[in-house]
Image (cartoon, rainbow, N blue to C red; front, side, top):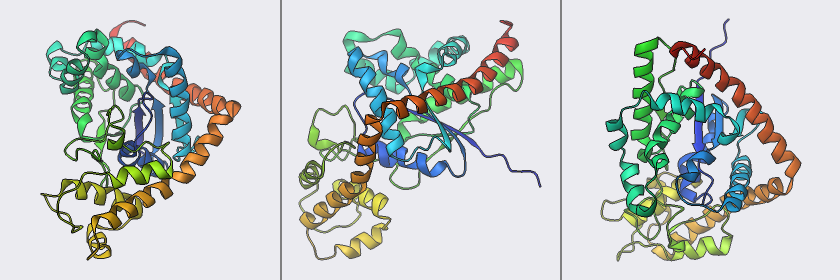
Length: 331
């Protein structure tokens, strides 16, 4: 019997600023689960990180820390390809080619460009404008079938699909047109201080976010300070976004449904619930933090994983790049 081809998955994450609990629940934790059923490629997208001003030494350190944290969170080099985007030159090469098949109007409609331009008005550079094309190149290079994304990346995935379909319409079936993969539970973790906003690593309020490197005391303290409402009933309601956010986190990590959580905390106040959520998160992150420290200290192991990953990723990427180059007449 012919073996069923596993869908290929490509996902990347920026290294700057570390990873939050939102990154973990919404994306990274799902990367581990996908490895059993899919052919997975995971990358630290360092090239995307330089659209804003940065300290080179800090970026260099953060790239390694990001790779170590992904390994600690369950990315398995035996079941997936883990690599640094900048170690595979085909990303930048294909990005330039695809920029010639992307319309100015398409890029000007990207909401993240508008948002980041407002946040960094002193540095509205061309890379900030065109980085959705690099993101499309990241995906299309590997003929990815599925791309795990959050709600804020839907527009970028749609652009990648449009570019692929446009290119295929001119030159034939060159690129796989990717589909989005959306986690069913905990896909969007909100700020602990502003439940209307997504938890963000760039939030200046440290109490608004849980970092994967936070210790148990810091985690519990931040949850105790989490914004809720003036009531005391733990239940999922539209007028209780803070509690719903905490229930989402607790549900994602404990496996309990909202109904089970409501029964568990019936007659108990928010203080008990916040403490339980904090302890649950601290318990989840403790083994990850231990493994992260071990991997980061083992330089030869981390270097070996990343070198092997870059080699395997390059082999796949070069096939696509060579085909594209032939199709457009560069070869």
